Image (tube, rainbow over all chains, first blue to last red; front, side, top):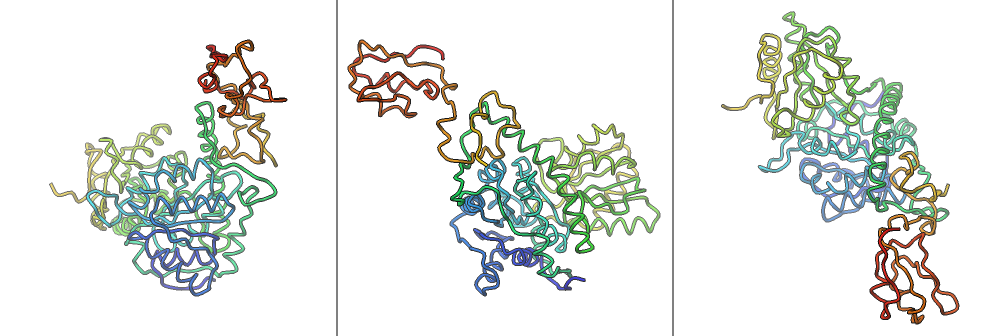
Length: 389
Length: 100
């Protein structure tokens, strides 16, 4: 039995970092992720952990220093949000192409502009093609649990890719919830020590990191990244099962809520899934066959698994918390629709945009979505929830 | 384990490219045949060459070996064909020929 506590999402992730005691954490503050390095710096100042904290002058530097530390052989991480992530854009791709198993604690916040500090997924969704593994949390417990699994996935020899652990800004990061923490010794045994085979500080074997790749090499390098991303699928499932055996909380690519016999399904990422579950409870009490598919892992995208889980759905509402301005759909909408097409699904699909820039998403909003996809035949396939018009 | 750099070339399948393009081991550049990048090839006219050796230090890839104070022929396994040597030669003893 774990330790019962009440923590905010930022406290929960900082506590996970404390339990892992990584080697190096460079960080630069940005709302709403600032508390994570702040709490970690406190643990270091109090002598509770011996992580090397590097105060840097920007997020471009925080991710650069994280990558340098990782290449040197350290277990490294940083934290950021929104425009902070935008400033690390170059290094995000470098982390993945150099196959450095770093972890980013991302607290999702809308990208400017217009400037806004509240939650949406435009920061991480914009980076969906950077080559990072992306895992999303519904609540504080999941943010903590996902973080404890991150290095096991990133450092696996068949993967060696950076991992982003995402939680919703303010909604998850600042709201205090009940949480069950795992004992330090169990965490240490689960996460293990990092012993890279090759690293820059190994005097026995010098190495080169990040050499120039001319056009005859670049494409083969990308194929290598793609294979690692595909390999990550088995590793994510295995680590999720092992975590379940330790904690009683197992994890896969997604969570189904009243999904199995549902005719009308909402596919959603992050904290709003909790809100939507309340709507499902209300509608189930009224005899409606509705359910939720909450996507936990967006990269690698579990296309076949999601399509299989949705094979009995008559209508699907795909919920995006980020605009992609394609004029046709959002990141989750377009990718899941592609997956459904390849699976020869005939389900009705509607792509809804909600919660941009922190706009409230309420139980009644979720109920209205279910009502609409269950009752109408000709629905505008690409629309906003709560838009004044 | 050190990377066998001779296996990494423009015909290598993706499986032979090391993860992250990382190269393990030192002094591997001599085994990496950059000569295959060349689209122009330097040609030495030995009669015009005065052995002034101005070409040797300007070569970015150290492809003009010197022995007993005399330059030898080009190391075409590594010469990328940049043509700097031909520009540096005051006697017009180096010309650039199209192709490998």
